[in-house]
Image (cartoon, rainbow, N blue to C red; front, top):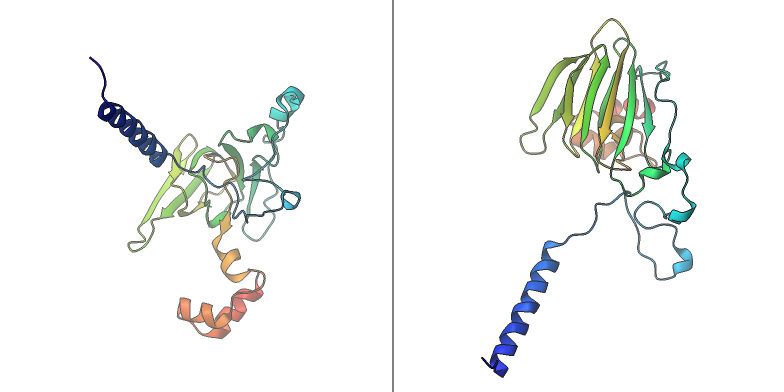
Length: 223
């Protein structure tokens, strides 16, 4: 069968449509930093979406190694917890792999305060102790999901949602968590709201929290 000009046009149109559908289904990679301002001068560039990559021929075993997660973190602070982070900044071999790890130590009544990871889901396993954990869903419902978990238990915190862990036991607690980003980012709610630099206007916060401005001033002074 001899193909006509119309047949060739139809085949070409189908190929272009298939290509367009393929492009539409693609997406940008997830951001690995808070923002990346575009520049036209390449000499002004610092990095793109995280890190530069080392020439593979120059890689060595140490690039994929981190030591120290067996060492308890210092919980002698206001919240009584300490997070030891293993991300792309401390383990360069994680670059582009989309994972990271933390060890969290809690003194009795120690708290890992409400926070979010804008770029990662977190899965946490308790090694020692008893934790009260939870997360809050997004607007408009703001539903709180909580559970008391013990050694050997696992809990997951969905990406971007506010979550926390609180040691409700009488002894120290230890947990490890995996995160689905080489650089998950952390926004500690109280620090971000009351300790931003420069500070958020007390008038804004007083209206947002529906309290007197004097209360906001006192809270900001803590951070």
